[in-house]
Length: 518
Image 1 (tube, rainbow, N blue to C red):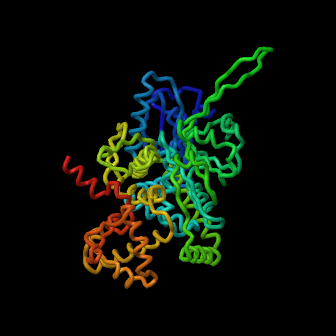
Image 2: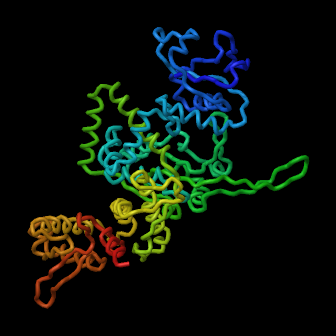
């Protein structure tokens, strides 16, 4: 492309030190084609355009100035900057004209190439992105855990919010706790995460990290601590960061023989990722969501299969594929805008209220809805000047399907493994009858005799003992029984998919109906 000055061909300042000469009266110069598409080069070029009027000359006119297009293909060309008063307007006119002449200037956000931008946007616009996230984790070597994976990814994404979600991953040694966190953090840009093995009592109060000679704080970062034990002495500042979003301290400093007090603030908020084989401080536990890794034999078999697959594959191809996945997510995360999110139907969402900690858990559940909406922002029609976005019913359904399992870990009233075993047996029985009778799970009825016929591991005495516990805990509804009559039950805690649901929590169907009524 040729760009030519039409106002001041006698100016002798040139471009980048290239002087005007009789052989080059229009000060035509070559700008490397690769650099031409770089953001920094575009800025330089627009500065050169700044205060001149341009047009594109014909090729034969350029031939007069000794430019050989057979030897070197036509590339991007530019010229120098002079001092015309209408700089901004004429710069815009020049850029518009260049665009119309198919100069192919493409200014993608964050300096991305067209290929990387399109790849990231394809992911962000995909309505099945939760499945894609799970598949990408599997490609990176973390298989199974279809529940824990999206929860971890959403928690990491929530760092962009003013009140993010923190995560505690629990389970025995070698169960895959660190693998879940490590894989998640691979997908987050490097400058937005901090990984530590140990924290001292006062470390967070003075926290600074230096990257390229620039200091930055903990604000909107993911703080990963490999094991809870590594942060045992820093539980209070961690708790303050999670609750207040900042740390403030006063320190006495001696200056010229005089002591004075100065106040220091370390700004959050942070997303905390911790793993443990045991328990954590109860006061910290109420500030995070907890996920438990799968310890089943089936999951162990899946881990063996993915390990064998990795060792039998071309390592270079695996590495290239992994790099592409990681780059896609880094770019997608960078393209997410930190919108404020509202939940217009929040007042219609019922939540368990039989625990004091639900006062915190309720907001964290809403934050899960908010985070889903933030991740799905490119699936929505958002005006360019929007100050906030609204969570829709799809956002709620995704958050609900994850939230019910998170809340079960907190609000499950069952005490004793055997009662839990009986409930699992009843869920299997109900789901089988639901399919054969073509009924919703909540409408399926059953008797104690059917339980024993379905699972020979239960006898009448055990069923009688534990079924009363399920009744008292609100899992069962008794339709009839007693005084010589056969007991007939139904489960009250299942959704349409057969998942356990805290009975106080609003289902997506109930929410949709409540919105229609109001």
